[in-house]
Image 1: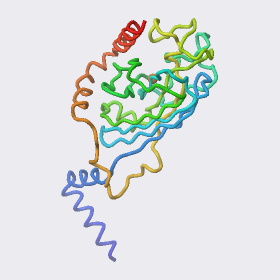
Image 2 (image 1 turned 90 degrees about the vertical axis):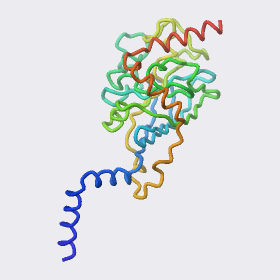
Image 3 (image 1 turned 90 degrees about the horizontal axis):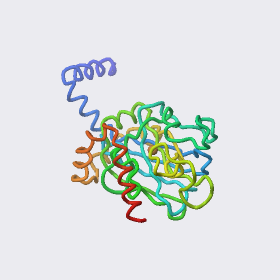
Image 4 (image 1 turned 45 degrees about the vertical axis):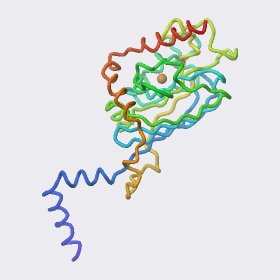
Length: 258
Ligand SMILES: [Cu+2]
């Protein structure tokens, strides 16, 4: 008997105040956590884990990876807009037979750069090759954590299951540095080793992310307001695919070191 009364009462309330009902539900939904198990690409031997908590467009990102080329920076991104998958660890996708699964050859699985997981400043695709702002694997491991704003298209990719975490930079010839005769498909002034994917993992909803009822963690964001403004400001430019800007920054840095 009680149920027979209770259900119509809820239905009436929802019909009368749909916006109120929706916003209340959203406020209690809390953040959603995603996890990526990083597997090796290009037989890099790299493994790791990525964790991303999205609260609206505020992303708290953690990346732990090991087996990387020590002492070298490793570009890392959210890639979006394709299948939400990774190339296999063998060279089955090395279409041009140069010995590497390049970013171009892997893009059919994981798409283009949506977010650059830099340590400071801009996180747009503009910074895709801003090597001086990516983690350096001092002992072959990286431990990255940062909170910042992602764009709507990146958020949508997470929800659609097409966001992929990719860490770049391999030492295929074991020389201890990014070098070799094969040059990058992204920037012919860079060795392929510097940009080829080293590890990849699809970002999937984590079991622990199942909507905490209390929502105690919502609204506790610790992002920098000025930084957010900067990221949003360059978002428009990012759509123009200005990967060249990052390359230019990299070349400039190389020139300074030379
Ligand atoms: Cu990438």
